[in-house]
Amino acid sequence: MSKAIDTLPEAGVPLREKIAYGCGDLSSNLMWGMTSSYLMYFYTDIDGLPVTAVAWILLVARTFDAFCDPVVGWLLDRKGGIIIPKIIGRLSIAFGITGFLCFYTPPFSFHLRIFWAAFTYIIFGAIYSFINTPYGALGTMMTRSIHHRVGLNAFRMMGCQSGQIIVSSLTIPAIFWLGGGTDLIQRQQGTTRYAFILALTSIALWTVVSRNCHVRYPTPPTKQNFLRILKYLSNNRTLWLCNCLVFLQFMGLASLYGFSLYYARAVLGGSESLGSIILTIATITGFLGALFSQYINNILGFRKTFISTIFLQILCYTSLLIGNFHHTLFFCFFSLLTGSQGIASPLYFTLLSSAIDDGLKKTGVNTTGIAYSLNTLVTKFSMGITGFILAFLLSYGQYTADKAVFSINTQKWISDGFLGLPLVAACLQFGLIVLWPRKGALGSVRS
Figure 1 (cartoon, rainbow, N blue to C red):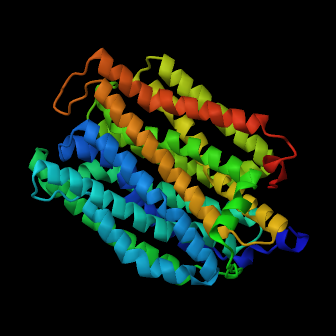
Figure 2 (figure 1 turned 90 degrees about the vertical axis):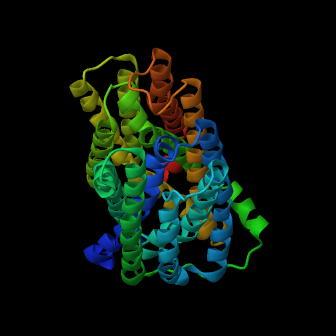
Figure 3 (figure 1 turned 120 degrees about the vertical axis):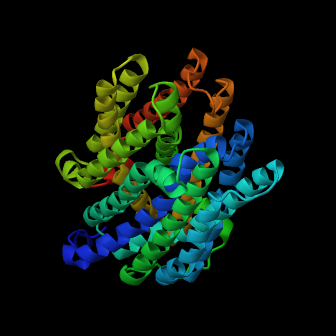
């Protein structure tokens, strides 16, 4: 990368445009965040579906729509990057509608409701692929500077965390208020109305992205053979590292957000409202971490920032898993954990951008769309597998929604899902980063 590109003036990406770019992840996480944090709980505790059926829905749906991503990336590379804002604008309405339908309980029979849940989740995931893959690639076309990409991705992650803050802090109170009470029918109605409001907001935010984010460095149309492009990508070691790290990152995030409500009820002895507080703290501290990510990266450098944040996560997970803390100490360790996750969050996207640039230098072939689509595939596959595991942990723990007091066995399995599984994922991430050669991918990314 040339010195002229690395010293691109910040005016090349105005603040207004950075905020507009962040609106994309804000929109995604109003609906995608709802599926990550509340969909499993909606299926088991509000829609009344059996946990084994939920496990298979989460796995099959995520696996099916994940394989839409390479197709989207291939089409994007063939058309070129200039069409990205138009794609986002045209798919915004479909994104909102399908996200809403995931939380709609139709007056169907039991088996038909299982089919409806699987079908709507698959369609929503596919639409998410068709809008989020171009959105992810858009960041590399707005600026070529690594320094400014960190800043741009920081706004993206702040948008992500803002969406999570809205979802985590407002969802449970809004469901009760919009439904007019806390019984099953009222919660179903409240969830449907709340999802409708989020869907409308998501549509508006995607429109902001499509009209205000500018493609300054569009990738040219690439007519390469699909299998040949995959061969190029398979030889990109930086991309392999990035996707392995992202797989493990989303395993931890899916465990945390997908199991918070269960952990609050079964282990901490609280209610859905305590689970909402846990999610709110996670998203606020994650937002603050993303806000200071570029500053910390400038001080420590890319590699040391990555290593430090993952090591802190391991310490916090271990402390929470082996300690029987009062709520105050729990939230202290939990805040440190999620804050470090927020600091690390923009680094994954920065590493991905560097992997794409490295591949272009070595092969001369534009693979931006497929590279981002494979990254999205990895995140979905990770979340699908994690959701499958978590649902079966509920089954092994004999979880039922109507219990007021949970057995030691149920508490153990839920704790293992909320803390143990992401601890393993964090340890694997740490090993990958520490053992990776200093002159390799991590060492080549400059702050």
